[in-house]
Image 1 (cartoon, rainbow, N blue to C red):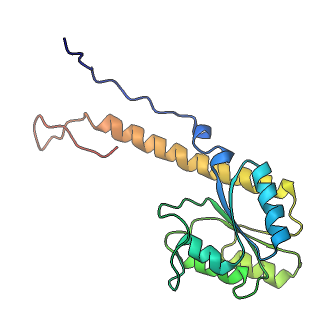
Image 2: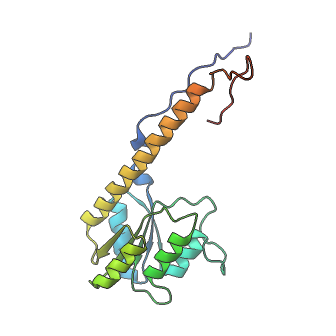
Image 3: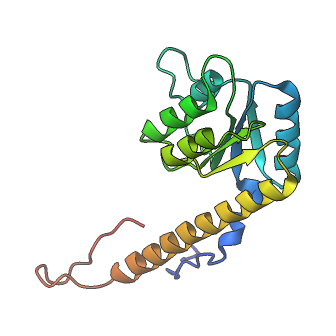
Amino acid sequence: MAEVMLPMKMEMANDPSKFTSPDLLHVLAVDDSHVDRKFIERLLKVSSCKVTVVDSATRALQYLGLDVNEKPIGCKDLKVNLIMTDYSMPGMTGYELLKKIKESSAFRDVPVVVMSSENILPRIDRCLEEGAEDFLLKPVKLSDVRRIRDSLIKVEDLSFTKSINKRELETENVYSLDSSVPLQLKRTKI
């Protein structure tokens, strides 16, 4: 005898921490200094972040698929939650990288944090005006990384909560009747 499955209401997890936990946050770290790259990578990993490190702004653009002259080195469905970049790098500066990211439709909403060992106020102001989330002085501290991570998680949680609420409304509307078409169910994407 065949088993018949009855339709059941799908339970959705309403705990955003399961989906936006810190270990799922992906950070792209950009620095030309090997020592600084290793240091920021270690701070991010200690803060339970997934980390990808590259040695130049050009490599970062290639990884993100934004360098039109080179083949992308990242994966097609790339999800980066945060980009941390050094300001002073040969070739392309962190400021120029910031501008290219903010001009991109795919990555303009990804927060960018600029880091520098030089405390030059016009440089800091220019980066913040261009859309940098924060400007950190090197050496970067673990407390700075955790503050940024926690801030990002709050934003991700809010986005997740809005997504859940929208899906719940769409699910409730699936079975409401359309008055112009008798006895038909409304179709919606879930």
